[in-house]
Image (cartoon, rainbow, N blue to C red; front, top):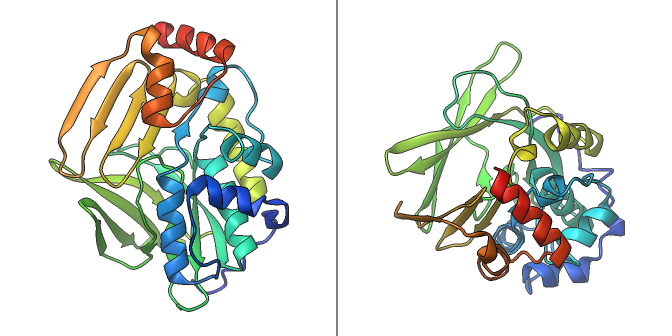
Length: 283
């Protein structure tokens, strides 16, 4: 990790810290320690859902902090990885953590090279000299940071992850695996090349506008807790527990608002809900 810099340019001074901490339910210490980092990530990933509804409703996805916190903090909405990372980075900066933005390539078992469209953060607490991966915007955990160390395997109440380092021609590649019922699945790969907020703006523009992006094709939402992962892919609602057990069913259009409210923590205005339901039918 030599040469990584303190996080800067993440506009932590603009963050409504009280509102953010209330939104995620963090009532503990506000110091840049490993314990606080663990608690803050767990609070964030279990409170703020993942969703691409802004794109589905034909609106732009701004990444300035005011817009992000208006949506994810002051409203009962979620966002995708770039929005989550920008918000979490602002909180880290405000609390005094040393950190750096990173970019990943989501693989999920794919054999071809995919674009770098996943935002992550590497964080070093003040009381610990190790670097920790904070992946708060994937929609499926992990619940807590993972030490960036080769062959590091962790288990958060049955949700299992593993990091692997592979030597590359111009530096190491890191791979994050998540454990599925049939074994380990590579989730994404990343390098430790520093990324900044402007890099996330570029990546977000691709994800929210490019015709080949999955986020412009169908509604998608996720809600993650210590005991269940809820996933809505178009009309298919899947619930997965840490032991791998799954239940799924197809939603009827009239159920959408209630399910989003009760199980995903997402509240849409009536007009937005009606337009999203149309996209659900068309997917």
